[in-house]
Length: 435
Ligand SMILES: [Zn+2]
Image (cartoon, rainbow, N blue to C red):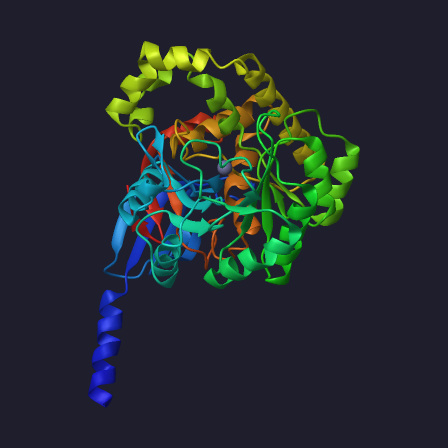
């Protein structure tokens, strides 16, 4: 027995891994000044030590990585994405296979997105994938999931192609409990509700049912995030204990009344500006379609379709098209206004559905935040520290000792211009180099 234990201990130390990174500029996600000439010791995927490279005591015989001239920032945490249902530009729950989930996670990882929260469009097969990740050191983007989300009977988004049968369709407050009893034992990280009539074209879940969902979730110890569009819904749900608005209010400017309610109840706000951008961006041939950074995640057939006259004509035929840029502008203005008022803002993009490009859209979101005056440092803190706090993930977020080494190495300084986040040299998840 003693010999067996000794052998096991030897095996454990043999599989123990230490990496030393040195001579980089550290941007740790806390929002302070960057640290030039930094060093980091990563042991078994976690940050064991970080500080001035000159003060680093590097253990002997470790893998040593010289990052002279490079910048290290925390991995991007996307709090609003959708996994697995899309192949090419087609959304269908049949696509939700472990292989397709893996492929999309790997795409997120290539773009430096090290964690993502899938918002209500997952099937039960997501849970064992997530649980296996959490039991070890993942080699791809970490999944957080709301599992199966909620809407009303025939409610939005069940009318969106490929979304019928994806969320629960709840007809009355009395029906909420049964669905929650089915969902909660799977231990979703969040509960998702879609609260929208899609510009009056679809059925919206009644407020009383949404409130019943929030309350039933709370009894199970779960936090609820809602897809909202209208100010009135944001206000009604924030008043009733909603944890997060998963999109910006887009029908009008937010006001002090909403700010006061959100502040009092600690309601979080996600921007999903890139989602708004997607509603009109592809009605034109965008120059970025030929950008290698875009091509990293978009397949050639998809790019050809986006460039085709048939696709462009279809986008241009949408009679609501002229309204979409206004919704983006309103979303941008509201996000900044809430942030400036001290409302907690997390990083969400709504990437994953057709033509909302996983990974690329996270960088687009940053650019759209920059347009309304978020500084690079604020954006980085929002997608790292703040978003980890949103998740309640104590060992993710900033690059400080004890946390998982989820980080992005850049060849250009993102504090000079946030679009320098495109210059990705390497991506680490739990200390595993995934790009
Ligand atoms: Zn969404």
